[in-house]
Image 1: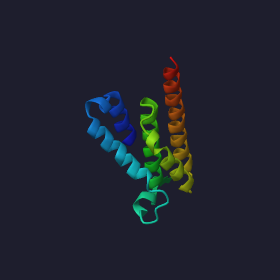
Image 2 (image 1 turned 90 degrees about the vertical axis):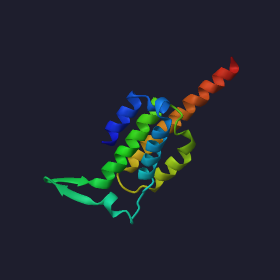
Image 3 (image 1 turned 135 degrees about the horizontal axis):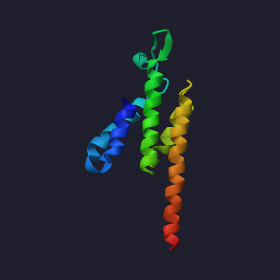
Image 4 (image 1 turned 90 degrees about the horizontal axis):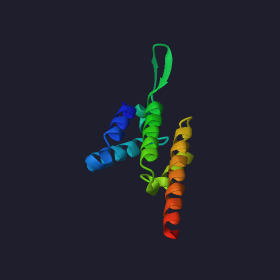
Length: 126
């Protein structure tokens, strides 16, 4: 559902038409991914057996939140640059297999930072 909502927000370009709703959704996603190895949030990390498939509830949610933030960053380069230090910190703290999603998000933001900085530098030379 998070990915679907992300797709809708990007398709409708809500960053321009509904900036407050857009920012609120980004904040919710950051709240979700900030729950790195939080032992108090058992619901987020609980394991459930569903139709003989082991499904880790919280890890799926964390991964989807990271993927959504990464898609926003790819669509709107520089959107999350202010959070880059926090993202790398979260990636280093995560001890489950979800650390890969955190790292991919942080690298996408770093890549955007480099691209935006390069464009600004080139524009200053002209």
